[in-house]
Image 1 (spheres, rainbow, N blue to C red):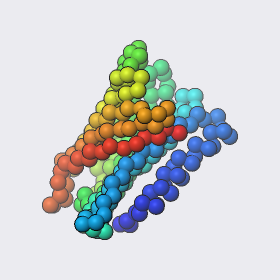
Image 2: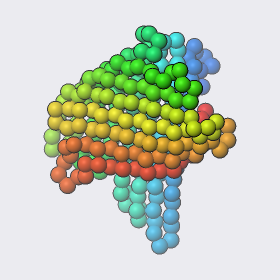
Image 3: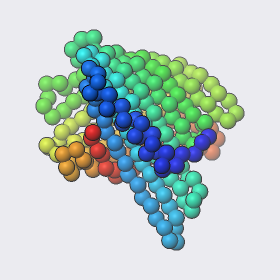
Length: 239
């Protein structure tokens, strides 16, 4: 598996966010976010930790398309200690008020998970809730699909049932709480993901975000942990 460098991260994010310029030439309404956090130390200890995420969304009539790239890289004494890239592409079609169908494709490359990569494709029904609340939103999806897991010694496919929720609460004009949760239950293993975040505006398009992510997989390769956690403080730029 190929190692990515900080410069390559920015190139990928610029390519991801650059599609926003097409909005002036199309009927789509585009929005994008760039999230970045980094810690570098030198001297007695040489450490490098980079956390990044880029998201582009396009809205047109009943359609909403989204692409996100979420990654983390850590090195110690110039030796790679952790590396993960999680890419998700989705398309939602609203066929009725507050009701939609979602097609979703995800791919994760986690260098130290014991898998070369894991990908899943699913189709789900979704519903928007709490639309009458001015400060809160809630939606859920439920559906089915297939997951492909690639490991050094064995590759396998399995059918999955997928459920997800997304809750957002505007605590004030400048602060937002958000909770997301998903579970993909398969014949061989189940994967659950949770992210809890608190976001506070610094400027009109710039915010500070504190988040805690938890991923749990019921069956993992030998000598690998089932649960991974990630706590971060990042700057979020809305474009």
